[in-house]
Length: 267
Image 1 (cartoon, rainbow, N blue to C red):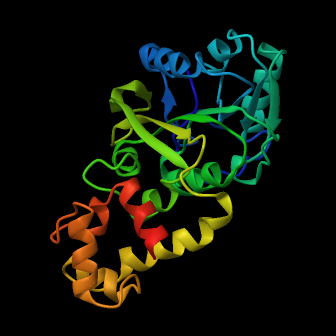
Image 2: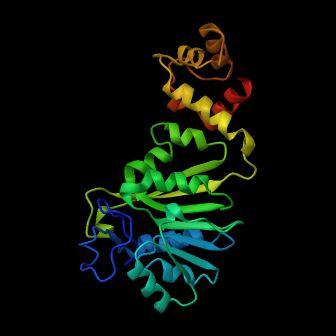
Image 3: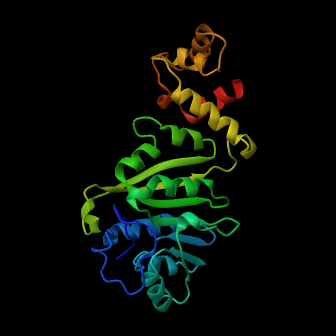
């Protein structure tokens, strides 16, 4: 069984000697061999070391180790960490919270089954970490859809688009976990763009622009862009949208990464 997707428990380590198994800890362990195999398939064609987030009892860790690459597993539960060290001596196992973990410098691949109740915090930590090239993450279905821009981008996704590409691989039914959660999961692939569409030094200014547009008042995009300070008038904003092939009726969520980069550069 692979790592948990706890929906209610704290992510802090349990006290040594306390009773309870996976169910008592509120953990949803991945038990579907096909899903585990698919995640390994998505990691296999990449290069470099691998860091697994929350390996649990190692169902995903063991096949990842067979890829023959340096593998680090960051596990918050000391019981699981001790077992992994015993079963997989070739794997570097770190006992700790991934939210506090500092990734080793240099290119690497991230993989893991993220806690459903901490998905956003985990994703922010992943996106802020330097160096890694691909992340293969299992998370809650609705969150994965939003990150992949299904039905339009969210503020968080749009703020990172010039540096990362988000792709939804597949839906993972709730029956793939034990105990069975109340929602489905999904495999999300995040690729670091090389080269990025904007320099890293402009990330702050770009993200502030996206925030102003997403949170700005207005029912139509020309008015939203004017009030966000992108254009001096609604007419100027409408003209730019028309020349860019963007409908006036579009909303911030409908803009592509190319639209956002062009708007940022124009502004």
